[in-house]
Image (cartoon, rainbow, N blue to C red; front, side):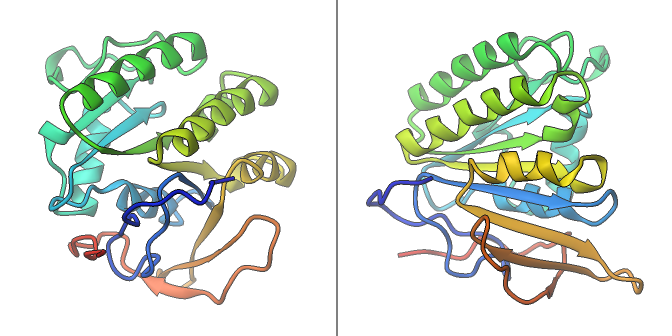
Length: 234
Protein backbone atom coordinates (compact mmCIF):
# COMPACT_ATOMS: atom_id res chain seq x y z
CA UNK A 1 0.00 0.00 0.00
CA UNK A 2 1.09 3.54 -0.66
CA UNK A 3 2.94 5.49 1.98
CA UNK A 4 1.86 9.00 2.91
CA UNK A 5 4.19 10.63 0.43
CA UNK A 6 4.17 14.41 0.10
CA UNK A 7 3.71 15.94 -3.33
CA UNK A 8 1.17 17.03 -5.91
CA UNK A 9 -1.66 14.55 -6.40
CA UNK A 10 -2.10 12.82 -9.75
CA UNK A 11 -5.12 14.13 -11.66
CA UNK A 12 -7.29 12.30 -14.21
CA UNK A 13 -9.71 13.03 -17.06
CA UNK A 14 -13.11 14.08 -15.69
CA UNK A 15 -15.12 12.50 -14.16
CA UNK A 16 -12.64 9.77 -13.16
CA UNK A 17 -11.43 10.10 -9.56
CA UNK A 18 -12.10 13.86 -9.31
CA UNK A 19 -9.99 14.26 -6.16
CA UNK A 20 -6.96 12.63 -7.76
CA UNK A 21 -4.64 10.28 -5.89
CA UNK A 22 -1.47 10.70 -3.87
CA UNK A 23 2.01 9.96 -5.29
CA UNK A 24 2.88 6.28 -4.89
CA UNK A 25 -0.66 5.03 -5.56
CA UNK A 26 -1.40 1.76 -7.39
CA UNK A 27 -4.79 1.26 -9.06
CA UNK A 28 -6.35 -2.01 -10.26
CA UNK A 29 -8.89 -1.54 -13.06
CA UNK A 30 -11.12 -4.58 -13.55
CA UNK A 31 -14.00 -5.37 -15.86
CA UNK A 32 -15.29 -7.97 -18.27
CA UNK A 33 -14.30 -8.07 -21.93
CA UNK A 34 -15.84 -5.12 -23.83
CA UNK A 35 -16.87 -3.43 -20.56
CA UNK A 36 -14.74 -0.39 -21.32
CA UNK A 37 -12.28 -1.17 -18.51
CA UNK A 38 -9.29 -1.04 -20.85
CA UNK A 39 -10.17 2.46 -22.06
CA UNK A 40 -10.76 3.62 -18.50
CA UNK A 41 -7.32 2.31 -17.50
CA UNK A 42 -5.69 4.07 -20.46
CA UNK A 43 -7.39 7.29 -19.40
CA UNK A 44 -5.83 6.98 -15.95
CA UNK A 45 -2.34 6.72 -17.47
CA UNK A 46 -2.75 9.92 -19.51
CA UNK A 47 -0.12 12.47 -18.47
CA UNK A 48 -0.89 15.95 -17.23
CA UNK A 49 0.73 18.00 -19.97
CA UNK A 50 1.29 21.01 -17.71
CA UNK A 51 3.33 18.89 -15.28
CA UNK A 52 6.69 17.20 -15.71
CA UNK A 53 5.14 13.76 -16.32
CA UNK A 54 5.75 10.84 -18.66
CA UNK A 55 4.17 7.42 -19.10
CA UNK A 56 5.62 3.93 -19.38
CA UNK A 57 3.22 1.35 -20.83
CA UNK A 58 3.57 -2.43 -20.93
CA UNK A 59 1.81 -3.87 -23.98
CA UNK A 60 1.30 -7.61 -23.53
CA UNK A 61 -1.83 -8.28 -25.60
CA UNK A 62 -1.40 -6.05 -28.67
CA UNK A 63 1.66 -4.58 -30.37
CA UNK A 64 3.03 -1.35 -28.97
CA UNK A 65 1.86 0.68 -31.94
CA UNK A 66 -1.73 -0.51 -31.49
CA UNK A 67 -1.68 0.31 -27.78
CA UNK A 68 -0.55 3.87 -28.54
CA UNK A 69 -3.32 4.21 -31.10
CA UNK A 70 -5.83 3.08 -28.46
CA UNK A 71 -4.42 5.57 -25.97
CA UNK A 72 -4.65 8.36 -28.55
CA UNK A 73 -8.35 7.59 -29.04
CA UNK A 74 -9.06 7.80 -25.31
CA UNK A 75 -7.41 11.13 -24.51
CA UNK A 76 -6.14 14.20 -26.29
CA UNK A 77 -3.01 14.43 -24.11
CA UNK A 78 -0.96 11.62 -25.67
CA UNK A 79 2.52 12.96 -26.37
CA UNK A 80 4.87 10.42 -28.03
CA UNK A 81 7.89 12.31 -26.72
CA UNK A 82 6.71 11.61 -23.14
CA UNK A 83 5.73 7.98 -23.78
CA UNK A 84 7.69 4.74 -23.71
CA UNK A 85 6.27 1.31 -24.55
CA UNK A 86 7.50 -2.16 -23.75
CA UNK A 87 6.11 -4.44 -26.46
CA UNK A 88 6.05 -8.01 -25.14
CA UNK A 89 3.03 -9.09 -27.18
CA UNK A 90 5.10 -11.28 -29.48
CA UNK A 91 3.22 -9.67 -32.40
CA UNK A 92 5.31 -8.79 -35.44
CA UNK A 93 5.30 -5.04 -36.04
CA UNK A 94 8.24 -4.64 -38.39
CA UNK A 95 6.46 -2.09 -40.58
CA UNK A 96 5.50 0.14 -37.68
CA UNK A 97 8.61 0.63 -35.56
CA UNK A 98 8.71 3.82 -33.54
CA UNK A 99 11.26 5.51 -31.29
CA UNK A 100 9.44 4.92 -28.03
CA UNK A 101 9.44 1.11 -28.39
CA UNK A 102 11.97 -0.94 -26.45
CA UNK A 103 13.68 -3.91 -28.06
CA UNK A 104 10.87 -6.40 -28.78
CA UNK A 105 10.45 -9.26 -26.31
CA UNK A 106 9.53 -12.76 -27.45
CA UNK A 107 6.26 -12.85 -25.54
CA UNK A 108 4.35 -12.08 -22.33
CA UNK A 109 5.82 -15.13 -20.62
CA UNK A 110 9.37 -13.74 -20.54
CA UNK A 111 8.93 -11.75 -17.34
CA UNK A 112 12.68 -11.55 -16.67
CA UNK A 113 13.23 -9.76 -20.00
CA UNK A 114 10.19 -7.57 -19.37
CA UNK A 115 11.52 -6.55 -15.97
CA UNK A 116 14.93 -5.74 -17.47
CA UNK A 117 13.42 -3.58 -20.24
CA UNK A 118 11.18 -1.88 -17.71
CA UNK A 119 14.17 -0.85 -15.63
CA UNK A 120 16.03 0.40 -18.70
CA UNK A 121 13.18 2.50 -20.05
CA UNK A 122 12.29 3.81 -16.62
CA UNK A 123 15.82 5.12 -16.11
CA UNK A 124 15.81 6.70 -19.58
CA UNK A 125 12.65 8.62 -18.73
CA UNK A 126 14.16 9.79 -15.46
CA UNK A 127 17.37 10.83 -17.20
CA UNK A 128 15.26 12.81 -19.68
CA UNK A 129 14.18 14.94 -16.74
CA UNK A 130 10.67 13.65 -16.03
CA UNK A 131 9.85 13.85 -12.33
CA UNK A 132 6.66 11.75 -12.39
CA UNK A 133 5.96 8.57 -14.34
CA UNK A 134 2.59 6.90 -14.91
CA UNK A 135 3.05 3.15 -15.33
CA UNK A 136 0.35 1.13 -17.12
CA UNK A 137 0.17 -2.67 -17.51
CA UNK A 138 -2.03 -3.93 -20.37
CA UNK A 139 -2.82 -6.39 -19.22
CA UNK A 140 -2.40 -8.70 -16.23
CA UNK A 141 -4.72 -11.11 -18.05
CA UNK A 142 -2.27 -11.53 -20.92
CA UNK A 143 0.58 -12.17 -18.50
CA UNK A 144 -1.52 -14.82 -16.73
CA UNK A 145 -2.20 -16.53 -20.06
CA UNK A 146 1.54 -17.23 -20.38
CA UNK A 147 2.71 -17.62 -16.76
CA UNK A 148 1.33 -18.99 -13.51
CA UNK A 149 -0.39 -16.87 -10.90
CA UNK A 150 2.53 -16.94 -8.47
CA UNK A 151 5.04 -15.72 -11.07
CA UNK A 152 2.81 -12.92 -12.34
CA UNK A 153 1.86 -11.82 -8.84
CA UNK A 154 5.54 -11.59 -7.93
CA UNK A 155 6.15 -9.39 -10.99
CA UNK A 156 3.18 -7.11 -10.20
CA UNK A 157 4.29 -6.93 -6.58
CA UNK A 158 7.71 -5.73 -7.78
CA UNK A 159 6.12 -3.01 -9.94
CA UNK A 160 3.75 -1.79 -7.23
CA UNK A 161 6.60 -1.66 -4.75
CA UNK A 162 8.62 0.46 -7.14
CA UNK A 163 5.70 2.85 -7.64
CA UNK A 164 5.41 3.27 -3.88
CA UNK A 165 9.15 3.82 -3.47
CA UNK A 166 9.43 6.42 -6.24
CA UNK A 167 6.14 8.26 -5.75
CA UNK A 168 4.88 7.44 -9.23
CA UNK A 169 1.50 6.04 -10.34
CA UNK A 170 0.68 2.43 -11.22
CA UNK A 171 -2.37 1.37 -13.26
CA UNK A 172 -3.02 -2.35 -13.79
CA UNK A 173 -5.75 -3.62 -16.10
CA UNK A 174 -7.29 -7.09 -15.64
CA UNK A 175 -10.15 -8.73 -17.51
CA UNK A 176 -12.22 -10.03 -14.60
CA UNK A 177 -14.28 -12.31 -16.86
CA UNK A 178 -11.22 -14.43 -17.65
CA UNK A 179 -10.13 -15.20 -14.11
CA UNK A 180 -11.69 -16.62 -10.96
CA UNK A 181 -12.29 -14.15 -8.16
CA UNK A 182 -9.25 -15.43 -6.29
CA UNK A 183 -6.91 -14.15 -9.04
CA UNK A 184 -8.41 -10.66 -8.95
CA UNK A 185 -8.20 -10.69 -5.15
CA UNK A 186 -4.47 -11.47 -5.30
CA UNK A 187 -3.68 -8.40 -7.39
CA UNK A 188 -6.14 -6.23 -5.51
CA UNK A 189 -4.03 -6.91 -2.42
CA UNK A 190 -1.07 -5.04 -4.00
CA UNK A 191 -3.09 -1.94 -4.86
CA UNK A 192 -4.50 1.03 -2.96
CA UNK A 193 -7.59 1.53 -5.09
CA UNK A 194 -9.87 -0.59 -7.23
CA UNK A 195 -11.85 0.75 -10.17
CA UNK A 196 -14.54 -1.67 -11.35
CA UNK A 197 -16.07 -1.14 -14.79
CA UNK A 198 -19.21 -2.52 -16.41
CA UNK A 199 -21.31 -1.88 -19.51
CA UNK A 200 -25.08 -1.77 -19.14
CA UNK A 201 -27.58 -3.41 -21.49
CA UNK A 202 -28.03 0.02 -23.06
CA UNK A 203 -24.28 0.22 -23.79
CA UNK A 204 -23.48 2.76 -21.11
CA UNK A 205 -20.08 2.43 -19.39
CA UNK A 206 -20.22 2.75 -15.63
CA UNK A 207 -17.55 2.69 -12.92
CA UNK A 208 -17.38 2.40 -9.16
CA UNK A 209 -14.34 2.79 -6.96
CA UNK A 210 -13.10 1.99 -3.48
CA UNK A 211 -10.32 0.55 -1.39
CA UNK A 212 -9.53 -3.15 -1.90
CA UNK A 213 -11.57 -5.31 0.42
CA UNK A 214 -13.97 -2.48 1.23
CA UNK A 215 -17.41 -1.75 -0.14
CA UNK A 216 -17.22 0.14 -3.43
CA UNK A 217 -19.15 3.35 -4.03
CA UNK A 218 -22.22 3.71 -6.26
CA UNK A 219 -22.03 3.09 -10.00
CA UNK A 220 -21.79 6.23 -12.12
CA UNK A 221 -21.51 6.74 -15.86
CA UNK A 222 -18.36 7.75 -17.72
CA UNK A 223 -17.39 8.26 -21.33
CA UNK A 224 -14.35 6.02 -21.87
CA UNK A 225 -13.46 7.89 -25.07
CA UNK A 226 -13.09 11.19 -23.29
CA UNK A 227 -11.36 14.24 -24.73
CA UNK A 228 -11.20 15.98 -21.36
CA UNK A 229 -7.72 16.79 -20.16
CA UNK A 230 -6.72 15.72 -16.65
CA UNK A 231 -7.94 18.18 -14.07
CA UNK A 232 -5.37 20.58 -12.70
CA UNK A 233 -4.24 19.86 -9.16
CA UNK A 234 -2.63 22.51 -7.01
